[in-house]
Amino acid sequence: MPRTPSLEGKELIAYLRSAYAIRQRCMQLFVLATEDKLPNFGCDLMQLNRVADYVISVMRGEYPNLDIPFHSRWRHFEAGGVRRLTQLDEMLVGMTPLQKAAAKFDLAIISVLLDAGAGNSWGYYEQETNLGFGRSEGLAVASFRMFCQGAFSSDQKQSLKADAQKLQLLTEEELADGFQVNAENPLVGVSGRLKLLQKLGEALVSSPDLFGEVNPRPGNMVNYLMGKSENQAIAATTVFDAVLEGLSDIWSGRVEVAGVNLGDVWFHPAVGDDNLVPFHKLSQWLTYSLLEPLQELGLEITNLDALTGLPEYRNGGLCLDLGLIKVKDSQVLRSPHLVSSEVIVEWRAMTVILLDCIAVRVREKLGMSAEELPLVKILQGGTWTAGRKIAAELRTGGVPPIQIESDGTVF
Image (tube, rainbow, N blue to C red; front, side):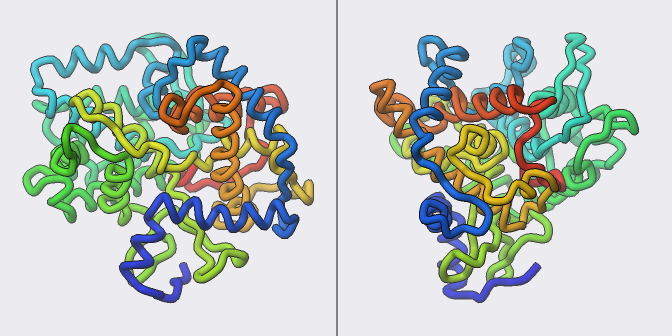
């Protein structure tokens, strides 16, 4: 991958790892879209009311009293109405609150990293319930069952955890078996997912301040974050910073600045200065998924809306399917695109800003404040569900409007 010119080294890295930078760089492309100056997409803000109404109708259908939880991996663990989290809590009985939170961090981090798009042909059959699931729910249930079976622990006497030793030794066969992958049930990017977990194992060892010196594990980040809390509160951005600091090295073949891997950051020539556009989608999805175990420890989460909406194909599909985003050449819809392509970078950047616009309009229509209805709840209620619903209405199998060549590590 090409390296960017080092403007200020550490200063540039810190900027590109901030939610502020995500919005600022995405806004540059969004403004160009509204001026009809982007090569692949235009923007029709006259559709904003229609989209907000559609999202509200979905929210009221899913959560009639608008008591909406955070958009996080924990929702997927209860796919099919099965109370798997209750089962997990029963398995964790006897642990201290910190030990329980560490186990939940282990599960969430592993499961989110395995959550990139599964493709249209894969499914998971859960023997315990005789239920079948695809896409994110299937990946969640599969990773949940693997975790409960001790698949990510090197110590079967302490099986409800993930640790560096086991993750580094994990094989493609083990992962494929856990996800029931075979010729008739292909999963996109198995080798990419495996590499991600193996590199996670390496990252755990290399950051003892975050993950512990003895038996490093993802869940030890709980102790680090507790140390960052003040007056029983912690900012969502503090959690996000820790995720990016601890996990940046696991992403392969990405843009680097001063030898530092930037992760979910991509080039677009229309963006000023260094042409770089950060998204950090999986890292923010992971951050949202780590907040609930921290709340269970009694911490208040502050600064929630500093994080952005998630630029993935359900939120982006909603904007495109309902006309907020306009495709200039229909050929874009006919062939798959690399994550690094200008098409996907533009689509994702517009999605980030449009999610903010949708959130403002939804709150106005409902008469609710950002504190009452933060973005993370609108995503759950919400735009992600609405994106899936409109896709199912428009296309067989509910496939997204734009196809992405995934390596199993971004979407």
